[in-house]
Length: 260
Length: 217
Image 1 (cartoon, one colour):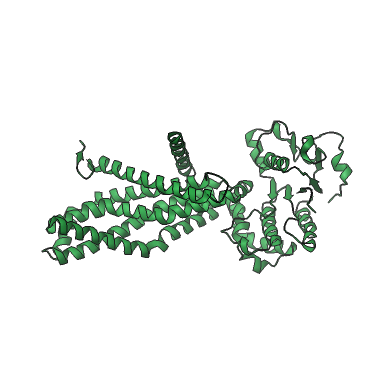
Image 2 (image 1 turned 135 degrees about the vertical axis):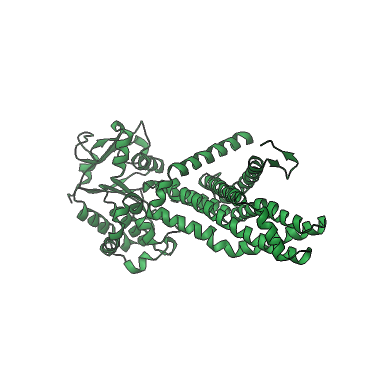
């Protein structure tokens, strides 16, 4: 039964994603563009302060633990910043923060609209709910996740480098120099693509569960949000592993190496 | 507007399609008189007591859901005989006002009003402001106060005014208003005539249908 439900959810999410790709042109319509602006403001702009603080804390924590436990030198500290913070933790952290804030909000809002008949009202106005509600949310969350990932990376890497300079035997200049020697544009493209994909997944899954709440009572709203969060986390983790494997040929932090 | 008596509406000679705004035959247990026959250009009230049949009729008209037991004629066209494309075109000529106005709770009145226009005819948006204000005035609303309100801040009448202005902007040929009296006091109920008159002033050949349950007034 659970397998059938999981398959149905997957199929529904894929159909919704297909709809977004097919109907992206509706973003030109003023009411849809307004929804997109609101979504970017909510997911991106208004969340920045919280993201920056949490990003700085987590970046710093990773560096402190690794330096303490592994007794790392400057080179290892920079590699950790690049591999862990820039490539993996940054996009993953941004995705989880977006999910925690926007994924739950989207699922809850759409489920409430479904239960109170507002989705039916849209249909009666001949406005496709997927065009008006889903397309701008998916695009808005994807773009915001990419931008927030960049913020988190800058803050976490910057914070980590500053702290490393205090702890390891190297100046900030030396650390920055080795970091830019090791880092490549591929790292940025990789994390940007990954965060876009994370954003799309979170938004599509949240919209799907919001539009299909498991009932018509008010209890269905938190249930829709819970389903959206649990499935989004699963998909984001899965995508992260698949992406790492495909792009770098490294699975489970180097325990399995693929042939490229 | 041509006045039509209840006898005209309830005892038509046959379900002719010519010049028919809305016609259909409902099952015997619907709580109505069975056959509905409303010519174009009139304003008329129909009562269907059975909520399931009301929902079924609304779904057949506005969601264009095929219903083999419900022969439906809309704006002179037999719905069953239409292709999918023709149904979509026909649907664009119909409008529905829900008892609560059918507004989206996170949009203010102005955003609610221009939502369908912005989606279907965005080129008309720049000139919509003056038209919206004029319509709100005609319907007896305080436009400046109303336009900035969210649905939860509106009275039931304001919600209906907002929903109806939204409908009028798209110039439908058939408007169906469900349970207009719901949530209104006796003085406000008389405003229905404003709604019908405003609609017919713009569309003399338009059909204005008020759908009620037994208690509707």
